Length: 395
Image 1 (tube, helix red, strand yellow):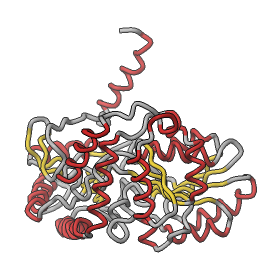
Image 2 (image 1 turned 90 degrees about the horizontal axis):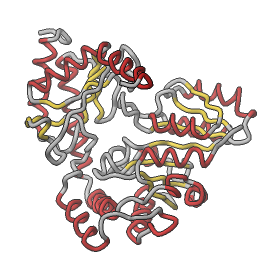
Image 3 (image 1 turned 120 degrees about the vertical axis):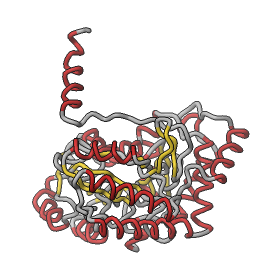
């Protein structure tokens, strides 16, 4: 092997030796409460399919009909020949759903962040960002060239201290926070963050990837959850989690949206969302606007599972959302726990460094409206069995 690549071989070996190497399992079934994983049927506790929409018949039908009418690929970026009438319809519907004036879609939530942050701030400007924000926010901040100032997780006092000390240095400044933090399942104190932003005249951006379809009235998100309509400058979301499809959205101030149509680089230089995906997202919106049944079921399942996990003696952190981290400490323990769960018919992957800090490895359970009570009970039994076997819980 070429010596030019030896360092990669060495790093891969280090990952394996330290229990941090990610072994990727393969699915051969639709998303749902149960999956076929590496050829084995298993209870699904991994997917971000909060509302069970990824395989919903109405979404599948909408995608099929759109493919029949429009074809499969867009074959162009939005600014040349890739904007279909369904793209505009989706953006109008998303804006109405979220109670804002305007919205723009991207190919993914990751791309939405990469397109938005560098378009709003650049060299000489400042970004004040929660230390636990998603990797896409971190990468977008780096890409922007602006100075990055981290504040302690969800600590509004620390944010205000940072703004007081450094806001005057920057001609433009942006505060960015996740809405729901994807690894811990806690919710940002967005109302208090907004108050600070208003005091220091900075733009506020919230990435609501795990709040879309989960928080707020009928899943309208964190801004609705706190009743802050018209006050948050930029809401970023994803259509790949609760919506069950793929894509990203930026909603809020129409001036910001217009600017992103001119300067959001993934919008300008990467092909548009495929039309079948857009049609499926529209069908998801139809379902969310018709009824709160799926959102209600998601939260009922969440309450039940969390209560039972605490009763068993597991540490599930400070989550207040369907994201349920089962804290296990070191990555090798979490990986062994995940393997044992799989042997017991439960698919729940271990998450360790660098996704979470060292010493905070976990199994992250993702509860869904697709789970029946019997599914949750079966999962709880498996967790109890493995937890006792590995000495994580007593009894």
